[in-house]
Length: 151
Image 1: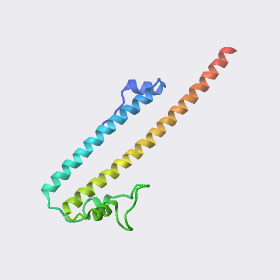
Image 2: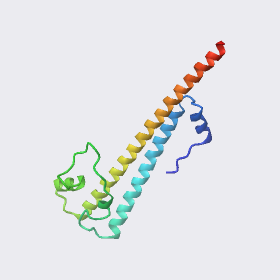
Image 3: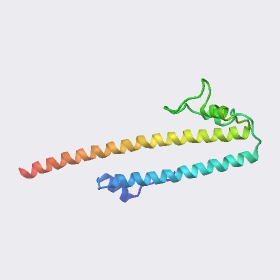
Image 4: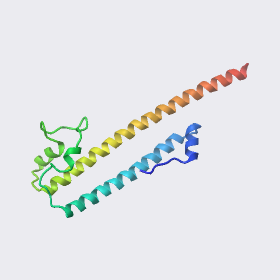
């Protein structure tokens, strides 16, 4: 992804400067959006190149099926033993193997992006937790400093 922090940004975070975490999170959000767009464009380009390079296989038993993960919680599952793509294809009545391949790739891409979003949400929660911890430590040190000054 190529995301790096500059020394000034790290210092600002370590020294609990006002809005430093918010700036970092905003920058991270923009970088992730650009990264996701590049990855999606590359996936679309490779899918287009694959469709020209090889004839469609006519089914979902290609490269997408082995990497498929469990459906995300809250997503309505298809019939037993059927992935979300297969259920949608059956509902649409799609017969074209190329359409099946394209939908399988898109479904896989969506699942990967959802996993990325989940990971980033967890990281954001951890950063917020660290900020709260730093704030409490600062408050404790500030109270000790005032207590020392009163003596």
